[in-house]
Image (cartoon, rainbow over all chains, first blue to last red; front, top):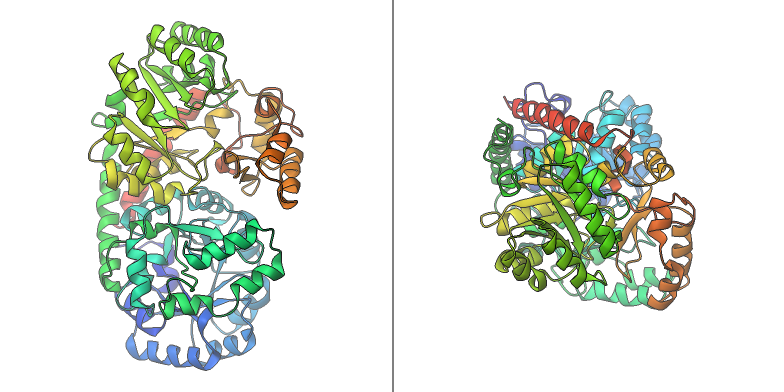
Length: 319
Length: 319
């Protein structure tokens, strides 16, 4: 299966499914579970101090013999320390996001690292290809957590990025993909693989709090929103904390006032500590499709089986 | 082809592709061209006085022997007159949008009309099925023109609507579909057919101004925005008129102030008269994929051919 798939070849994995690096969800347990099941697990460095990341990398290597990677938001304050740990620990796959791909790509590739960058539009995808990035993740408006300012959805972003850089590097679709139908749609649109966040955030191996997982399971299609657009846009579930942001914005709050409302540690409070009222509940729009809390291997297996049945079904439609 | 497709059977058409009713674009010329090519053309009543609509219906019937329909925004001021003309002229397919499906569905169905309603979320889709609507169009955030307040994208809306009502009525996907890859993606997500707006707005038979069509052809992926959210959200190209809205909003303009900025006749000015600075240039996010101004039959033929090649390609991926 997927023998000629460029994403599978690039990472030496069985299925072109990447588990997104997500703050407070994707430590070594989730990453190793996905990698052991034949996908690519990513440790999310965004919520980790450097020593915590080092520990997660080591535990992940103990837990799987398969390839795994680390996701690094480039706005991270300790970025130099993080990158040195990644190199010193011999991590071979790094996904970077939220920043300029030109800054770290050369440094990482000199150290034998495969570099993937997350992009919200065509222009940055082309820049990535020009700068030697090995693949791009194009992430749509529907994705959870931090998001681009262009608000381009997966449906329209993927074919445009595929047309622009697909002849040079593999294209990975992200945003709104929670089952095998979404995977089939992404590959129809021209992606070589998919990056899946929310669906893996709500698994047994995710380090998110049980209350957060249950809240996502209960969410319907209308319950997330992309907000804090004056700071860094972020998609979250609407809750009392969001309502506080909304009130401040309606009263004309500027950047500083919004920073005060946001405060510090909100995503930890919401996702990791399970404070559903005062925490920031980052999750994608696809949460409306999430109804169960299975293990990560089951998510991957179900997705591949549904991908296969879907592609057979669609191929038969015009027959 | 598509012999068992529910959308093709419902409308008695060859391909499950509906040309969206669009203000200032979709008169009898475009609708009859799409219907003659094997899709379903819709006359967009939203920009027509009752007598103009009557004339378009009669000309459309002269121009095609195939089924066609009329799209009616239910907020239309002359709605009673419009509905009576539709019934008197013997139109057999009506797509309603922007309103409550309960109000007109029964009246139309008593007169032998097939009724389809456009929905932005799962709840309204279920209400439509309960009220006897024959099919729903679920329209994503990426769609051009007027849009829902929930900002749910096609990628996540389609599978949720398919799960909720697909066992009762056909589901048609709209928003972000501009080629055969988008069509294949929509059908993979669980839709029975697609409604395509922007791609048909930029064809030879569209009544939009040549300058508007050329402007869309030049647009890149980042150039549309969903704005005027305090009134009725609408997606348009960013231009000096949009910048005026943006300035007003940044200065805290309320509903009345925004109504003054909007004024009257903006979409006619932009789309029909080709005033690219002061007009409202309604178009979908998929405009970044639109690079040509072909005839409508070519759009449909290319879409079906690319749908077939795409579904074959994707079905072969996991082999």
